[in-house]
Image (cartoon, rainbow, N blue to C red):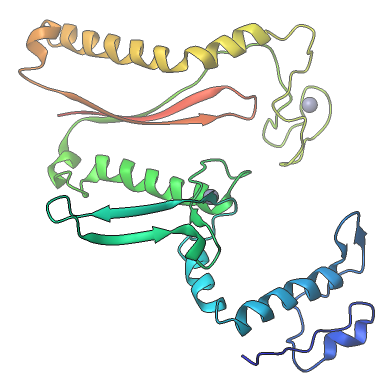
Length: 263
Ligand SMILES: [Zn+2]
Ligand SMILES: [Zn+2]
């Protein structure tokens, strides 16, 4: 890349046809925002910064550093230094100072599970979860393939109702008379906020982990009972394995998708 790039003039649209730059996939609108100027101006500033990085030879290392984030939208930015020593000899094995990294910081994936926070990390989480559940059902990832022959149940444990909410009942309209679209912010909100059991709804979420724990205890008890065993003797014959994923429904309640397997 040349050390000096000609930047498009931010005020005229003719600059887009400047041969130094590929035309953008979508023509930026000339709308202005409070702090950033027009889309074209922002693009010009970004290009200037990239050109400066390229001129200093930092662009490729920076691209590698950003590439390792796998598209994370909100990486955690860490600063500091780390030295690894051989405790026997005192020899320095390696030294990392974040100031010397291309971004001037160590960037770490945020790992957030919510798509609204980070599409890339939440997708990766969903994919990892899928692999985990699939391995529990058909084997793989250190789980023997013989588990596929064990009794298994895929269950969804849902919270009770705390009052009617706006929903999408198939092709019909919601009780309120509206046909809510997929992104409608009313979806999942109470039809009558004055009468909705918010306290119950909050307590349910707060106790979801304890409710799950109770469920597994009772399930073991029921299975032992059905087999004519005590809980203590059940463990000599069978173990229960679980995988569960907690999800928020539109109405804000936690529910669990779970695979339960008897080994
Ligand atoms: Zn992320
Ligand atoms: Zn409605």
